[in-house]
Every structure is written in structure tokens, then in C-alpha cells.
Length: 134
Image (cartoon, rainbow, N blue to C red; front, side, top):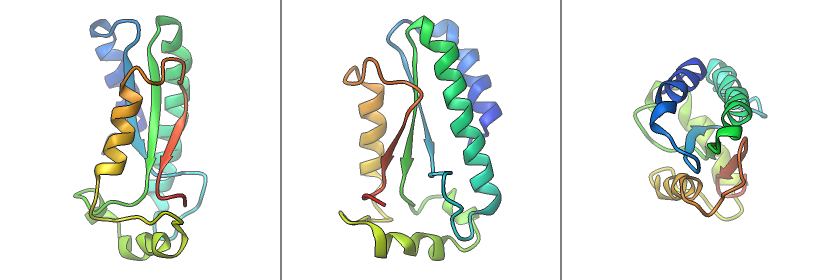
């Protein structure tokens, strides 16, 4: 888990290694909604989303894109530290029109790869939702 501060610090530290057309992609969990049991993590993700917009503003003139993938819940090491994760994840059983598999990180990974690629040459400061439609 990377804090918003670390995300910006890391991005700025790596700036000398980036060239025009580079892309930074982070992972978030939609902070527009006050999810059950998510509490302090929701606040942290809101900070990350804001930091991403500022990075997009600051790095855009250098031709560097900054975006986030808002993935649905994935059973991971980070998920183990969220009390009530199962209750939170249960929302996807009822609201994901295309379905969502908690054990499959591939859809979120493909979203990240897509944003890292040159398929989105003028997309920056965005949050792409890869969450089964929730």
C-alpha cells in the first residue's frame, strides 16, 4: 500500500528516468463512496486520487501521463488488513452487472497495462473503473 505522499514522492524521484510519453498508474478503490468497513482506507484513497490529479497537472507539460485504476475488491495481502473485507466485498455479489471475481486480479492488471501502454496517449488525471460495473 502506497500513501498519497509516497506516490507523489516516488513519482517525482523517478522523474529523471522518465521521458515524454511515459505513464504512471496507481491503484485505488473508488473514494467517491463511503464503503462499509473501509473507514480510514477510504480517506487515504481520496488523498491518493487527489494526488494523482496534481501529478497529472504537474507532469503533463513534460508529456507524462498519471492515471489510476479503481479496481473492485481483490483478495490480496492488503485486503487482509481491512477489518470486514468480506462484508465490503459482498457488495459486488449484488451490484456488479458483469460480475466480479475476488480471486482474479487479471482484469485490474489489464486495466493497468492498458493505461501504461500508448493506447491512451492523451488521457491523464483519470480514474478508470475496472470493477465489474459497480
